[in-house]
Image: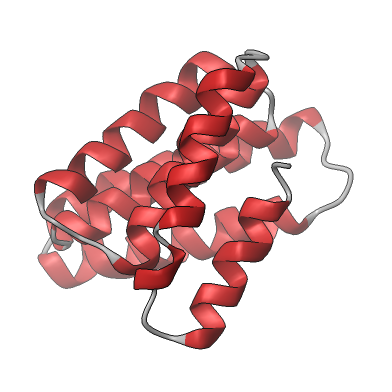
Length: 146
């Protein structure tokens, strides 16, 4: 499989994951398919993408597990995403969402102090989100964790 094929599959799986996330009441089968799709996306980005694609893939995996209430997996992938973002000095909304993922994961465990620490870091970094629309979207997502 060539790099372009991997890229197409990564994008397709990423978008399909969002389709599942948008379903208000998923079946257990749809939950499993969503998990498979998000891991598929990250797997293919490993061949076709850069570190930013990998960070976003890890973030999406964390989001899926957060939505499903699977704290250990959510936290594992949130940490992976944030590590890539920090090691590569990515800022903008990727850093905010790295913190948001951590807050989501800690929320599952009922660890309010840790959740609030990362939530505050997300808010503190909103100022560095370049585009107004992105900044507003980031804030909306952080506000959901209050």
